[in-house]
Length: 240
Image (cartoon, rainbow, N blue to C red; front, side, top):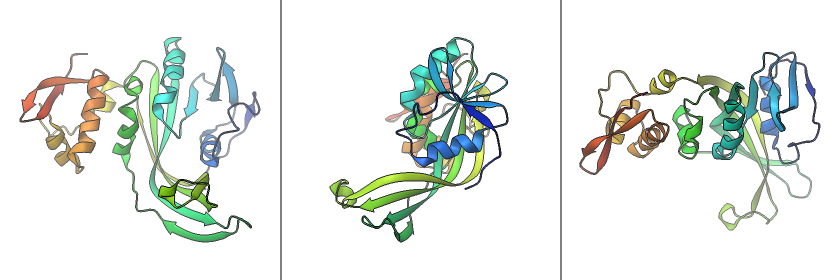
């Protein structure tokens, strides 16, 4: 695991830790800097990290939609909030023996993520896009999923049960805070109005993925509908 060295103080030991996979705690360690306060209480809420400069850092490895109310409330009070969300560019599947927990096999998952994968979550969390005092930091990572085939998992997974997710390496990071930073995802060479087809072609992704970008931007007020091209909606910049 790639990590940074930092010293921080856990103020609310045990709170919000019982349901974490290792991925969550490892990312907190990776992000922690000297002087940070871990699991600090801020305005009645426990946050993952509180920077010495006052910025709140929340690591969200799961659904971004679940964290929106908390983030919006903290940001509305004037707090600067950074939401850190990992996207798995590569995933290694490790299967353990159900009795001895010895490693039986390792394989690479065919699933691949990229920067645009974050919009799979943002379609349900547009409140994080270009909101005042809110920064979304996307970490592209290599991760491992640890499974045990003990028959308690779903039939779709042939009884495999996921027991942990672990960080292997952080590859890169990109932060978004302002309208301009978000809209920079749309190539300047692509003139408006934009459709999911034209944006997808410009970004090298399929139209369904591009549609999530435009939909999220529309719900966040960055773009607005501007007619149709056949059955596809067209979008152009919205007025600030």
